[in-house]
Image (cartoon, rainbow, N blue to C red; front, top):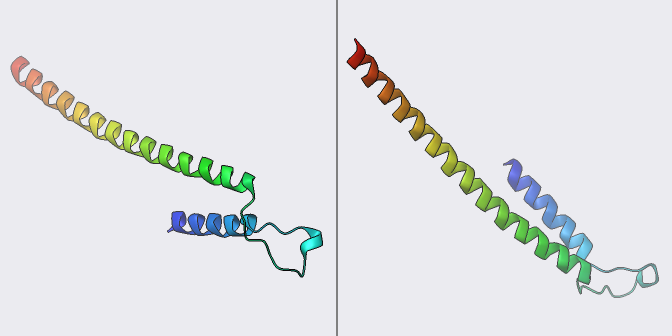
Length: 85
């Protein structure tokens, strides 16, 4: 839910930034051509989103691996205790 709100806010900001209005242009026809800097920022934002998704997946995999290691450690420990008992 929070991510959806943040995404909506960012989209609204991008819409506002992409409309290039100069003080001389107020009240006249609005140029809806995005500013070149906005295009660069949008590309960078998209690249960051892709990278963030990769990192989230890696963290998820590491967490799963850690759970497997802990389970194996518990199994080995219980087997060792059974042998030593």
